[in-house]
Every structure is written in structure tokens, then in C-alpha cells.
Length: 194
Image (cartoon, rainbow, N blue to C red; front, top):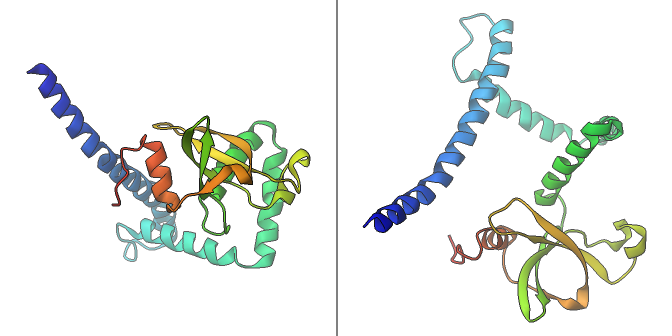
């Protein structure tokens, strides 16, 4: 009886936890935007023009404006210059580069990034993602070679490892990147289309 109750509680927890975490993240982003930008707008605008939620609207407009500005060559060069300053700071460069590369990995601007493949290892298959198609961009021993970096995610973790694997050892996988990542991260539990 207690086993059945605890199993039911776990099912309920695992059902509601992703919803709660998603809603909380959106809530946190909205309240942070409202506190920071709303406070600045209250200081700049007369009280009659300010209304609750103006900080959130300003945050969305700011993100959109930054996206538009990043299309300009001069702005991209200035941004790149600023990044080089970050890359020169001892502790900051490690954290910033890791976060930047993670976002670049999932960014839609790079074509071919994250191509889903199947890696065969001792008659076992794992799902992986080719993280760099252009071998000229790889470290010296791998430039122009047959091997490409393949990221193998771990189930239920934000982690994994990267292997340099010959293209001949990779089998294309007919899955979207988000489907394959969800399948790998949940240990195959979410195999069906949602």
C-alpha cells in the first residue's frame, strides 16, 4: 500500500515538476525585467505614463533591438571586441566561454550544428550530435581530417562528453535535434512525438 502511494506521488511530482519549473523561470524573467527596467522607467517617466508590466514590455523591446543591432557589421565587431576583453579576464573567461559555447550550440544561426547521428560502440548504439562540421576550425591534429567532434549527452544530467569520431563510423539519424536531445536526456523515456 505504501509502495503504491509513494509511486503515485512520484508520478504526480514528475508530471508537475517540468510545468512548475517552466512557469517559475518565466515568472523569474518577467519579475526581474519588471524590477530592473520598471524601476528605471519609473525614474525616467512621470507617474501618469508608467503602468505595471511596462518593464516587461521594455525588456522584450530591448532584446528585439539588440537582435536587430547584431545584424549590423559594426555592432558585431564592437561586440566581438567586448568579448575579447571578457576572454582576457582570468576567472570570467572560463565561465563566459562555457556559457557562450552552450548557447552557440543551440543557436539556430549556425547551419549543420548539432546534426543528429548514431554512434556504434561495441555493438551498442548511442545518440550523438556533430558539433562542428568544418574540420578547418578544429584543433591542429584534427584539421582537414576525417574525424569530427561528436557530443554524447548523458541521461538526466546537463553533461556529456565529446569524442572525435571518423565520419565513416557515424550513421545519420532521422530525428530533429530537440527530439534526439530529449530522448537522450530522459534515457529514452520520451520516445514518442509530442
